[in-house]
Image (cartoon, rainbow, N blue to C red):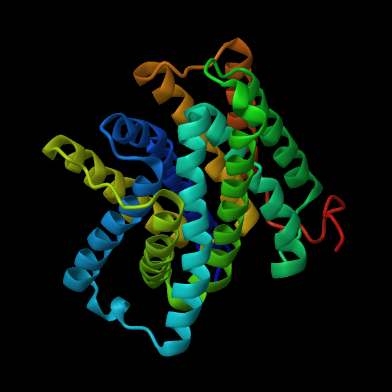
Length: 312
């Protein structure tokens, strides 16, 4: 691949990661509205990927039917590996949102970039530069300031909220690394389809054990919200995210996706009573700075002749 083609692929992947994060930033708004309509978080955790998988399957069968085919090994890797990572993330994210609100959940979720950058070196050989490490620290400082600046952090933050938020972050990091490992081989469409279907299979088992029976939306409006939730934040966002992972480093994708708190904070401020104080907005500014900085830094492969590369 020529240098110009590599730069175009990297720019497209970075744009896809940011676009996916912007869509994910609306997740809390959809979830909170479904909670208020009587659909509990455990049921939302299952119904959201079911709706997303249905849209994905319908689209692929019409537009790209060959992408639905996968061999047994691929089915095991994508369905089981991806399904576990995405399923754990889905249940933890919804329970955290219900426990502590949108801004805190999203902020806790972005422990994930530090995990991804730390693990992607030894696991994938994608060692970060010192500049990249510094930008991770800037981004994490920003998301944690947004935690401190959230208006609606309940007293249980140190227990239930912390646990589910950290579990969600670990699940997010796991499927980011998983996507980077398999998406270049199987393609983003297969990866997102079978990992989503696998997560549905996991959640069909887990959700009844946690909450009993699955609660379906009871009104046409609730069904509309659920379907839009699945379409935008699973079918579209996950496809963009995994396609980005097929193009650029896992650490770069993970940090770029940290723009999600900006979108979540803006939407929560405008649409919910879960906005941010001035210190929270300072955090958001740091997140934007970190994400923008990652967009202009080189990969280690491009900077191997420079003195700022972090040695394995």
